[in-house]
Image (cartoon, rainbow, N blue to C red; front, top):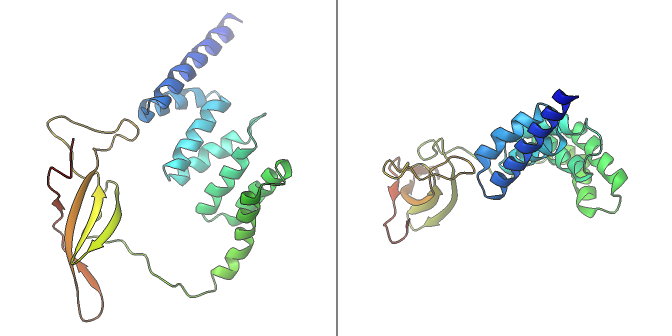
Length: 212
C-alpha cells in the first residue's frame, strides 16, 4: 500500500509539473514528463501526448497514443473524433470511420463529425478523379527545419523558415526546440517547358524585417 501510494503521488507530481510546463509553452519538457506518466496508462498524459502530436502534424505518433488512450475507461468523447482525424490522415479510412461512428453515437448532433464521416465515404469517388494540381518537394529550397508561407513577388519567393541557428544566443522555441523563425527570399525563373526553377541560394531578409 505504501508503494502504491508513492507511485500515485509521484505520477501526480509529474503530471502537475508537466501541465505547468505545457501551459507555459515549454512543450519539450512537458512531453518528457507526460511520457513517464503515460507508461502507467495515465489518461490525461496519454491525451496530452496524442493531442500534441496531432497538433504538430506528427500523425504516426499521434495514432500510437490515441490507440492507447481509447482503450482506457472514462475518456473524453472528442478523443474518438480526433483519433478518426489522425487515422484519416494516415490513410486508414475504414478505421477512421469506426472512430467517427463511435463519436457520433455519443454526440449525434455534431455536424463537423458527420461531415468527416461523409468525407470518408466520398474518398473512393475523389480518388477516381484527375488531380487539379500537383504537389512536389522543392529540393533546392526545403530544409530539415520548418519552411512555410511561400509568397511569390516578381521573380522571387518569400518564405518563413527556422533553418538558421543562432550560434551566439542559441535562441530556440521551447515547444519544439527549433531555432527562431526568420523570413527569407530566393529567386526563380520559368523555362520554356513551363517548369519553375528555384535558386539554391536563400537570402535572409534585412534586420528591420527579421527582428529579435
